[in-house]
Length: 470
Image (tube, rainbow, N blue to C red; front, side):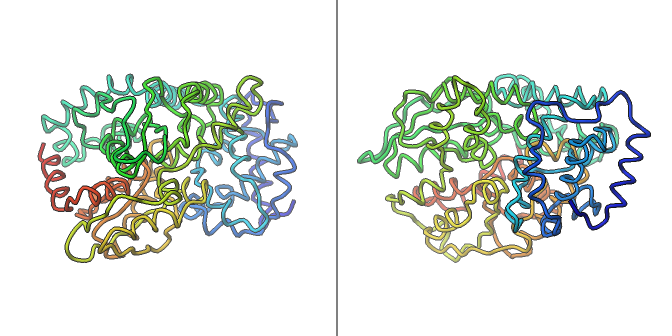
């Protein structure tokens, strides 16, 4: 392997060995990063300009090719998995932009996935890190647990404490930075967040064209229940019978992206079982991070003798809802969202664009709404900094990327930003507020729902204002 600045990596190797503290010099034997995938990297550097962590931090070791060099060094026993090394894997957003860019076809997604699982098993994190991560993984993937946590936060919002403390800047000043970052993306909670109101079977309007399953998501059903409701209305209006099993939970995306292997496998199995034997034409998801993980079930469960084949069959039916509607076509009549031209900036979520290779489909759907004009932003493919829970675990980098993303989106002059991922929506909404921007932010399914119903955006503006006042 060749590297543009190998001496910097040699220095890291030496420093890491000096600071080594009862650490195995190699990855363990359970699915380490594959040497043949590592050797596919020719260190051409094409990935550098598209890697968000490299662009913010500016260090070779925080780039895809730098991390691949470190993986190789650990595999060979030349570099230990020390704190100095582990942090470079932690700074990766897992956005997969490098996979799209790489001319050599390096499967960096598989490399970072294998490495993160190794880090979680073999790297002894500090006590504060352990507590924070265990709290997140024990809470976020389980809606009922998360609702218990959010109940006092609803009171915190309704009594005006959130608005007061944010205005005084006390949260950033007195709370640990990760906790402050977690609070900063907390959306306006509603009573609807505390119950699943959608029935298990919703019939199609008019002639039934398809029978589809729908994943509610663990965080989305709480933070953005209106998106799930809108998705169901759009699907039924276009001839789909929608099945929503009550037994479904988290798909495992959040834990998968952070190397929590056993928990991810358990959640994946539960999801497969929840949708088994339902005779579905497709399984639909309206959050891109979840959709990418669902499509990866065949890989995630490839070593499980009972579920390996089930996972392949399951993954073959998974489609993003925009991908599905673009494929089968809209039958419901669409009405303009306002009388004059509506300029929309569509934001590509990373796991939609780079993971699922879906880009044209959502744009084609939005262009079918009368009077809509799409505008493209600078650096449209650059991550917004959310990346699951990255903006909590790495708040400084996440914050800078969020600022850049919102600046680029609003510089288009668009009146509305459309985003199809719960994490992106939370991140963009936070930075719109920080920049005192009044630009509307909606999920594409909400826009289609409004258009089908003949509702105007003025009604969304009114409901948004009421929510802010509450």
